[in-house]
Image (cartoon, rainbow, N blue to C red):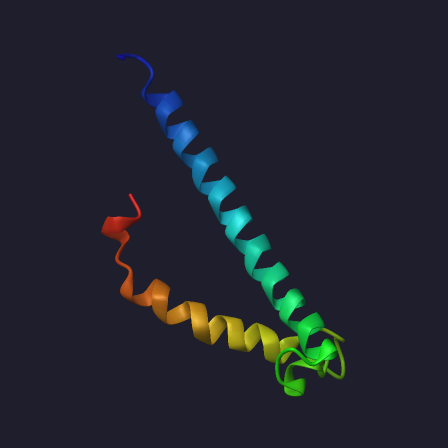
Length: 81
């Protein structure tokens, strides 16, 4: 439709913001789930140690990063659009 290019750009930005927030919350939640699982003994206990200063599950967050990071690195932008 002609004359609605501005709306298409707005919708695209809104979709990207929505996807970004969902992915961020899912990764944050996944690290918390692994932290709880390690306290229950379902995954190695090394992940149940919180950061001494911030009291966050920092080892789990690094493990999630190391697992998900390479997948994003090999997945080209061409497949995202």
